[in-house]
Length: 229
Image (tube, rainbow, N blue to C red; front, side, top):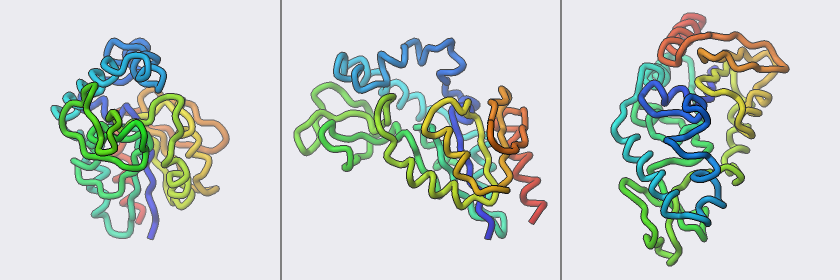
Protein backbone atom coordinates (compact mmCIF):
# COMPACT_ATOMS: atom_id res chain seq x y z
CA UNK A 1 0.00 0.00 0.00
CA UNK A 2 1.62 3.30 -1.06
CA UNK A 3 2.55 5.73 1.67
CA UNK A 4 1.93 9.47 1.30
CA UNK A 5 4.16 11.53 3.60
CA UNK A 6 3.35 15.21 4.04
CA UNK A 7 5.64 17.84 5.55
CA UNK A 8 3.66 20.94 6.50
CA UNK A 9 4.78 24.34 7.69
CA UNK A 10 3.41 27.70 8.74
CA UNK A 11 1.89 28.50 5.36
CA UNK A 12 -0.81 25.87 5.92
CA UNK A 13 -1.91 27.40 9.22
CA UNK A 14 -1.64 30.93 7.82
CA UNK A 15 -4.65 30.30 5.61
CA UNK A 16 -6.67 29.61 8.73
CA UNK A 17 -5.64 32.98 10.13
CA UNK A 18 -2.54 32.14 12.17
CA UNK A 19 0.20 34.65 11.39
CA UNK A 20 3.63 33.41 10.34
CA UNK A 21 7.08 34.73 11.08
CA UNK A 22 7.97 34.77 7.39
CA UNK A 23 5.08 37.10 6.50
CA UNK A 24 5.43 39.67 9.29
CA UNK A 25 8.70 41.44 8.50
CA UNK A 26 10.77 39.30 10.81
CA UNK A 27 8.43 39.82 13.74
CA UNK A 28 6.23 37.17 15.30
CA UNK A 29 3.16 38.84 16.77
CA UNK A 30 5.26 42.01 17.17
CA UNK A 31 8.10 40.20 18.96
CA UNK A 32 11.56 39.19 17.84
CA UNK A 33 12.16 35.44 17.87
CA UNK A 34 15.07 36.00 20.25
CA UNK A 35 12.71 37.54 22.81
CA UNK A 36 10.01 34.89 22.90
CA UNK A 37 11.18 31.61 21.38
CA UNK A 38 14.51 30.64 22.92
CA UNK A 39 15.51 29.10 26.25
CA UNK A 40 17.50 32.27 26.98
CA UNK A 41 14.40 34.40 26.50
CA UNK A 42 12.45 32.25 28.95
CA UNK A 43 15.24 32.46 31.53
CA UNK A 44 15.43 36.22 31.07
CA UNK A 45 11.73 37.09 31.06
CA UNK A 46 9.46 34.08 31.66
CA UNK A 47 6.36 36.25 32.07
CA UNK A 48 6.77 37.72 28.57
CA UNK A 49 7.33 34.31 26.98
CA UNK A 50 4.39 32.72 28.78
CA UNK A 51 2.12 35.61 27.80
CA UNK A 52 3.20 35.29 24.18
CA UNK A 53 2.27 31.62 24.06
CA UNK A 54 -0.93 32.20 26.04
CA UNK A 55 -2.03 34.58 23.29
CA UNK A 56 -1.00 32.18 20.52
CA UNK A 57 -2.88 29.36 22.27
CA UNK A 58 -6.01 31.51 22.55
CA UNK A 59 -5.76 32.50 18.89
CA UNK A 60 -5.36 28.90 17.77
CA UNK A 61 -8.63 28.02 19.52
CA UNK A 62 -10.47 30.64 17.47
CA UNK A 63 -9.46 29.45 13.99
CA UNK A 64 -10.68 26.49 11.96
CA UNK A 65 -9.02 23.97 9.64
CA UNK A 66 -8.92 25.09 6.02
CA UNK A 67 -9.30 23.23 2.74
CA UNK A 68 -5.72 21.93 2.86
CA UNK A 69 -6.17 20.39 6.31
CA UNK A 70 -9.50 18.88 5.29
CA UNK A 71 -8.17 17.45 2.03
CA UNK A 72 -5.27 15.74 3.80
CA UNK A 73 -7.63 14.26 6.37
CA UNK A 74 -9.98 13.11 3.64
CA UNK A 75 -7.16 11.39 1.75
CA UNK A 76 -7.01 8.83 4.55
CA UNK A 77 -10.27 7.49 3.11
CA UNK A 78 -8.85 7.03 -0.40
CA UNK A 79 -8.48 3.28 -1.01
CA UNK A 80 -4.93 2.05 -1.35
CA UNK A 81 -3.11 4.87 0.45
CA UNK A 82 -1.78 5.42 3.93
CA UNK A 83 -1.03 8.98 5.08
CA UNK A 84 1.51 10.35 7.55
CA UNK A 85 1.80 14.05 8.34
CA UNK A 86 4.98 15.55 9.76
CA UNK A 87 4.30 19.14 10.78
CA UNK A 88 6.41 22.03 11.95
CA UNK A 89 3.22 23.68 13.20
CA UNK A 90 2.32 23.79 16.88
CA UNK A 91 -1.45 24.11 16.43
CA UNK A 92 -3.84 21.15 16.32
CA UNK A 93 -5.58 22.01 13.05
CA UNK A 94 -4.54 18.77 11.34
CA UNK A 95 -6.07 16.75 14.17
CA UNK A 96 -9.21 18.87 14.25
CA UNK A 97 -9.62 18.31 10.51
CA UNK A 98 -9.56 14.55 11.13
CA UNK A 99 -5.99 13.45 10.36
CA UNK A 100 -5.00 10.55 12.58
CA UNK A 101 -1.25 10.14 11.92
CA UNK A 102 0.36 13.49 12.81
CA UNK A 103 3.87 13.97 14.17
CA UNK A 104 4.59 17.43 15.62
CA UNK A 105 8.28 18.25 15.27
CA UNK A 106 8.17 21.42 17.35
CA UNK A 107 5.65 20.53 20.04
CA UNK A 108 2.09 21.72 20.54
CA UNK A 109 0.45 24.81 21.94
CA UNK A 110 -2.10 22.77 23.86
CA UNK A 111 0.56 20.87 25.80
CA UNK A 112 2.91 21.87 28.61
CA UNK A 113 5.69 20.37 30.66
CA UNK A 114 7.92 21.00 33.65
CA UNK A 115 11.15 22.89 33.09
CA UNK A 116 12.85 19.99 34.89
CA UNK A 117 11.29 17.12 32.94
CA UNK A 118 10.99 17.05 29.15
CA UNK A 119 9.42 13.60 29.04
CA UNK A 120 6.21 14.18 31.03
CA UNK A 121 3.71 16.23 29.06
CA UNK A 122 0.39 17.62 30.27
CA UNK A 123 -2.64 18.87 28.36
CA UNK A 124 -3.02 22.65 28.44
CA UNK A 125 -6.25 24.37 27.43
CA UNK A 126 -5.77 27.68 29.21
CA UNK A 127 -3.00 30.05 30.27
CA UNK A 128 0.34 29.23 31.89
CA UNK A 129 1.59 31.85 34.34
CA UNK A 130 4.72 32.38 36.38
CA UNK A 131 4.24 30.35 39.56
CA UNK A 132 2.18 27.60 37.91
CA UNK A 133 3.96 24.42 38.94
CA UNK A 134 4.06 20.88 37.61
CA UNK A 135 3.52 17.98 40.05
CA UNK A 136 7.31 17.79 40.45
CA UNK A 137 7.30 21.32 41.89
CA UNK A 138 8.98 23.01 38.93
CA UNK A 139 7.65 25.85 36.80
CA UNK A 140 5.51 24.84 33.86
CA UNK A 141 6.45 25.92 30.33
CA UNK A 142 4.91 25.40 26.90
CA UNK A 143 5.69 22.05 25.29
CA UNK A 144 7.35 23.84 22.40
CA UNK A 145 10.74 23.20 20.83
CA UNK A 146 12.38 26.61 20.95
CA UNK A 147 15.19 27.78 18.71
CA UNK A 148 18.42 26.33 20.03
CA UNK A 149 16.75 23.24 21.53
CA UNK A 150 16.98 19.68 20.26
CA UNK A 151 14.14 18.30 18.13
CA UNK A 152 13.36 14.97 19.83
CA UNK A 153 11.01 13.75 17.07
CA UNK A 154 13.42 14.27 14.18
CA UNK A 155 14.65 10.65 14.10
CA UNK A 156 11.08 9.33 13.96
CA UNK A 157 10.31 11.87 11.25
CA UNK A 158 13.31 10.77 9.20
CA UNK A 159 12.20 7.14 9.50
CA UNK A 160 8.71 8.07 8.27
CA UNK A 161 10.14 10.06 5.35
CA UNK A 162 12.31 7.11 4.35
CA UNK A 163 9.19 5.03 3.69
CA UNK A 164 7.47 7.58 1.42
CA UNK A 165 6.07 6.60 -1.96
CA UNK A 166 5.10 10.23 -2.53
CA UNK A 167 6.21 13.29 -0.56
CA UNK A 168 4.27 16.55 -0.29
CA UNK A 169 5.96 19.64 1.11
CA UNK A 170 3.36 22.27 1.91
CA UNK A 171 3.64 25.83 3.21
CA UNK A 172 7.21 25.72 4.46
CA UNK A 173 10.12 27.92 3.40
CA UNK A 174 12.51 24.97 3.91
CA UNK A 175 14.79 27.26 5.90
CA UNK A 176 14.39 25.71 9.37
CA UNK A 177 16.66 22.76 10.09
CA UNK A 178 16.64 19.92 10.87
CA UNK A 179 13.09 19.76 9.47
CA UNK A 180 14.16 21.00 6.03
CA UNK A 181 16.60 18.11 5.74
CA UNK A 182 13.80 15.54 5.84
CA UNK A 183 13.41 15.74 2.06
CA UNK A 184 16.74 13.99 1.66
CA UNK A 185 15.46 10.92 3.51
CA UNK A 186 12.80 10.21 0.91
CA UNK A 187 13.74 7.23 -1.28
CA UNK A 188 15.36 7.80 -4.66
CA UNK A 189 12.64 8.01 -7.27
CA UNK A 190 9.99 9.13 -4.78
CA UNK A 191 8.01 11.97 -6.40
CA UNK A 192 8.28 15.20 -4.43
CA UNK A 193 5.68 17.95 -4.71
CA UNK A 194 6.42 21.37 -3.24
CA UNK A 195 3.20 23.34 -2.80
CA UNK A 196 3.88 26.98 -1.92
CA UNK A 197 3.14 30.34 -3.60
CA UNK A 198 6.69 31.44 -2.80
CA UNK A 199 8.30 28.39 -4.51
CA UNK A 200 11.11 27.64 -2.03
CA UNK A 201 14.17 26.25 -3.75
CA UNK A 202 14.94 22.57 -3.32
CA UNK A 203 18.35 21.30 -4.34
CA UNK A 204 19.62 17.80 -4.91
CA UNK A 205 16.56 16.10 -6.40
CA UNK A 206 13.82 16.49 -8.93
CA UNK A 207 10.81 18.35 -7.64
CA UNK A 208 7.47 19.34 -9.07
CA UNK A 209 6.56 22.84 -7.94
CA UNK A 210 2.91 23.74 -7.47
CA UNK A 211 2.91 27.52 -7.08
CA UNK A 212 -0.38 27.79 -5.23
CA UNK A 213 -1.60 28.36 -1.72
CA UNK A 214 -2.04 25.23 0.36
CA UNK A 215 -5.85 25.33 0.15
CA UNK A 216 -5.67 25.24 -3.66
CA UNK A 217 -2.55 23.18 -4.29
CA UNK A 218 -3.09 20.36 -1.80
CA UNK A 219 -6.52 19.25 -3.09
CA UNK A 220 -5.18 19.52 -6.67
CA UNK A 221 -2.21 17.22 -6.05
CA UNK A 222 -4.24 14.78 -3.97
CA UNK A 223 -6.80 14.43 -6.78
CA UNK A 224 -3.95 13.58 -9.14
CA UNK A 225 -2.50 10.99 -6.76
CA UNK A 226 -5.90 9.37 -6.22
CA UNK A 227 -6.46 9.16 -9.98
CA UNK A 228 -3.14 7.40 -10.48
CA UNK A 229 -4.13 4.46 -8.25
